[in-house]
Image (tube, rainbow, N blue to C red; front, side, top):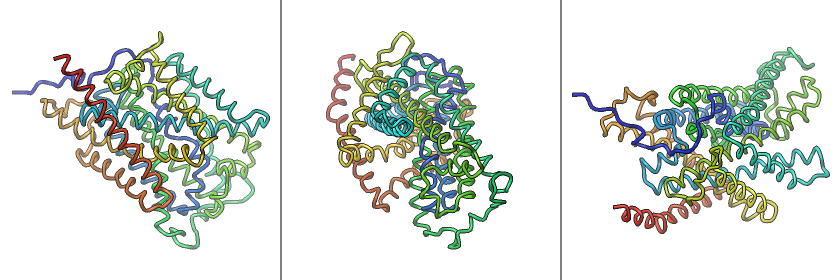
Length: 472
């Protein structure tokens, strides 16, 4: 006797109201835009200097592998249940409401603070071009631009992010081609560099393997943001058709852009020099004779910062909307404007981002430092939650009589992949202990997580239990 198919809508119901106006190309660029930020363009040289060329490539390969494990887990979940709350809603349903509450608010604060950092980076670049206009005015202008893009409609947001992210993707592709041409003597006046820069004269790891290990920690953060594809799935048209294709495409492109770009950087810049260059990409473009290389790359970095901020603002507003529908956030955050946008979520996120900007100016060594540090663990812990939810979802699905063969996408090598996802990300968190500069990340992150969880247990759980009793 065959078992009945499980109604996935009942297993983790979608929340009605948002419009499915995002196309697959929008979804692809939202995830890429959230993942590839200013770090690749500005911070990659420091990674090469710290770990050596081979060590840096190893670090990015490890980060790519961890991200791949996460996205394989998220693919099964988001294709089976394409809802705006994504992993926050999955945590509420398959782990506990307390886990969903903690996941949602941690992720929201993480991205809201990151928006402030993106605004600051963009404001500093604009101020370098026009010194007469203070950074804070530029930041205010960027706030207005992103607010308008997000408030008009999800389609306008998706289109803007498509072009924002498209600029930095184009810059990376051009850089890869130009860098390879420089390495093999097709451009510039240096002759063929070949693979000479991979020889450090001090072995594979010139600063020891411990330096590679510490670099891997930093690199693992670089890939966070790829999970935004799960949140955007709730507004994707034809999710069963588009989400599998998008997740596969996102995974391949992010790995390609990061790893190949690092290989080219390591091959074109001596590892000792890489750490002191403000913009390694501009340095390489300058060597091939590209006019205005610094200015062009500054424009790309500015666009990259706005792209990352745009993706983060979208994710935050949808997360707050989703939590309000579950009773884990104030109900007014669930209100939509006539175009189906959760406008209060957009506004309150920008308010927190603005407060973060103020602390950066007035309390940079205390409040802002703690805010930034408290977000350090969030990405890895969210990825742990995704792996955990995938295991719990599969167990629940089978328990209710579902056939794994009926799932549109199945996480391969189950349960190895979700277990690896959990273990590797917990390993990254644990490894922070071995880097003294990261102790504040562990401390503030732990305090913040415990505080949010305890708030739910002390206040929210009683309220939800009382509401449940009234309905009985």
